[in-house]
Amino acid sequence: MARIEGTASPDLGTTPEDLAVQIKAAEAILVGAGAGLSTSAGFTYDGSRFTDHFGDMIDKYGFTDMYTAGFYPFKTPEEFWAYWSRMILVNRYETPVGKPYQDLLRLLEGREFFVLTTNVDHQFRKAGFPKARLFYTQGDYGLFQCSVPCHDTTYDNEEAVRRMAGEQRDMKIPSALIPQCPVCGKPMATNLRSDDTFVQDEGWQAASGRYAAFQEKHLRGRVLYLELGVGGNTPGIIKYNFWRRVHDNKEAVYACVNLNEAYAPAEIADRSVCVSGDIGGILAGMLEMKQR
Image 1: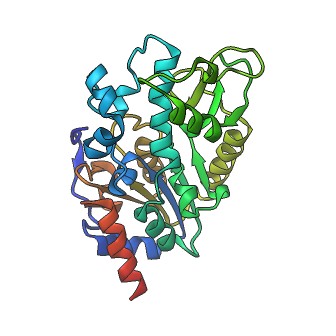
Image 2: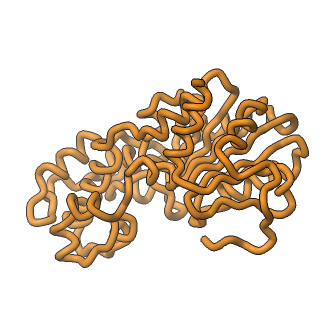
């Protein structure tokens, strides 16, 4: 996403030291995390991480990365789930906890905070973030749902995913392993928001309620809206929402940490700090400052 018109240099600074000052001064911190945070942890969807796990599919289908491969029109469900079981296994179950997530948690220790994220890789929970402080608004690789959907329930998929990934041959899973809805018998889908069939189950609704309560509690006061690695795919969920909240609360501060897209709207530039660079390195450096 290109820098948009109407942006201005942030008055509160552009360095990790400037951001550390705002974190320390905040009465409450709302973190908005996008894909850039996981990318900084090394969990990329292209490069060697992609070719090492999907070399055969690259040759057959011409895939260029894991993200766009997810939209490929597979001819059979056996082929579809061969790809998706590997995709989920690699990004949900076989990734270690990312250091940037661990460092972020340590930076937030003892603070009033909540995390809103569009990431679906479960890294926040792996790092030890309390479930009560998280809202995964776009779903979770680790959950299945009915594709229709005929009911609003999700199901843990680790056992099914591991079997599909382990037993596939020639880029197809055995037909007997195709996941089917236990209620209506229609195909299952991964619980990822892509259209109006996305299931917002009981856990999602509870997290949404906790997020709303946090926002309501902190409509005023020195609130830091800390945006980490948010791009332009779904800016209305985090970025635009944070801008509006800071605009409406004259005591609030907006912070943006991004490798290439750290900027603030002119309307809130006087209460913004924007740091360009690798998120993981920036968080690690701030943690060292805190420990000193």
